[in-house]
Length: 120
Image (tube, rainbow, N blue to C red; front, side, top):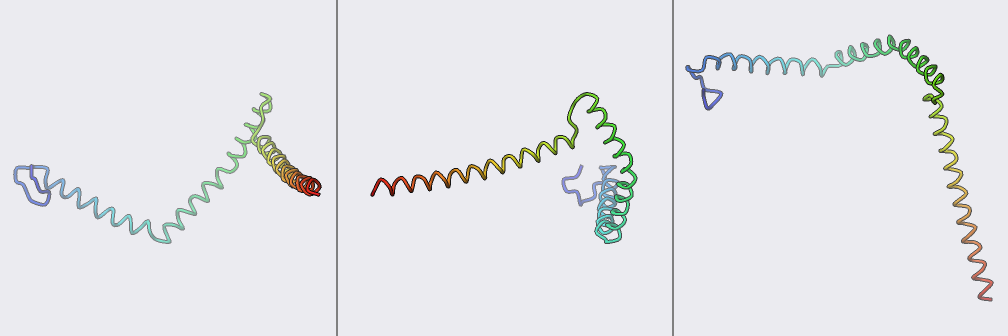
């Protein structure tokens, strides 16, 4: 075996094949990088993805319907139920924050009035 990969070693029978393999892979990498970085490739990939998403939409809808029915038969909440519950909890949390802010303002106002009345 040779210490330097660039030197030819007559005692290494696979050295020339390894060199040819490396050169071929390098050329393919350059070629494919050039192809992938084009607008035409991006457009073709986008069109294929759109087509696959459009083709899978009915299946996805069927799966969603069957999952909702299965969950309902097991008395378990569906994704929509969880989303509605999360929205309601968010609204409750926002109202509680508003009430807390109003109570804090009222407490500060009351404390200020007490200090003024005590100092008089």
